[in-house]
Image (tube, rainbow, N blue to C red; front, top):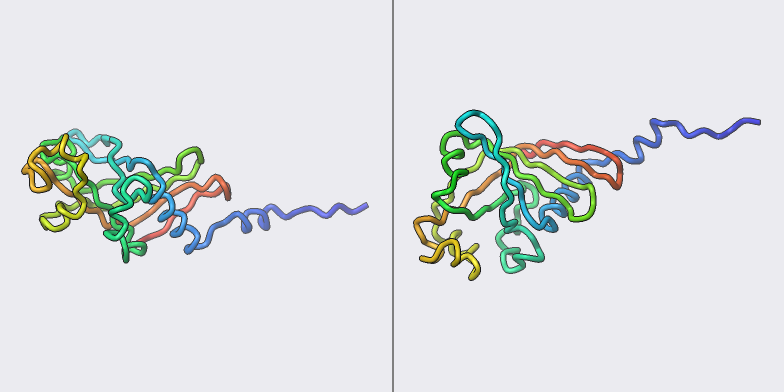
Length: 172
């Protein structure tokens, strides 16, 4: 009796994600992640990771969805933070960062790697402003302690437990 055996390479190829699937999953993760975890490099050369508000979250910041229209291909990330925070000092010394998004309850996540830049445009600061930010920036969107960071990632790396595969792609 001859058994019909599945070739392990065939199984692996069925699980493998193509570029479009990787990019679509990455955008989905950005939209559904409750927080974004930002990693900066401190003065001693070690990474520091912290959770930040995910302004791209469709559920939490639905009113900001329009800011990200046209940015599915460049995966632009916007972050709001205190100018006086430790992360700002880190970025001033070394702008290389990573930002991690994870789907709640599922082992799917993506890390974006790039350099953070400071957004000086007051219109962007005003556009991302949320009433709840007043507790952090009592003077409003143009509070001197309110900084907006932007990241245009150059690379993405992730994990998709549904397809049991790691993925990676270059953005620029």
